[in-house]
Length: 149
Image (cartoon, rainbow, N blue to C red):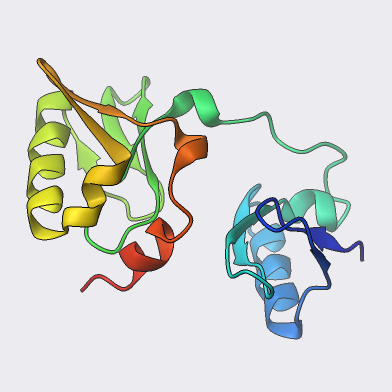
């Protein structure tokens, strides 16, 4: 199996036995993207189970354009995306759904009131909220979110 390279610290690492087992299970379930932690810097690293286990030859198309916001649900590190077929907004990480942007804005207001640091990933606009550039999310953000309770 090839080494994994962390996008944050640029170090390559071998998967642990646990990571390998989790990624194999993800591949068996048809999951295209999976998140692991870099053992060096503890940043999130996206891996592609189907590619790693030769079930597909190419990584899935980038999904940046579909991610609208960091999910405003407690302890969730997922992203809000619009599901055009179902005509809802949702987070595939925690399963939360919203009927419209107004409902998302209400949840953003609630989460930034409860956890001040969450303001770092949202920008207030006159007509609601916008996301910061998702590539600029602070390194420690995901770790803090996962510790919410």
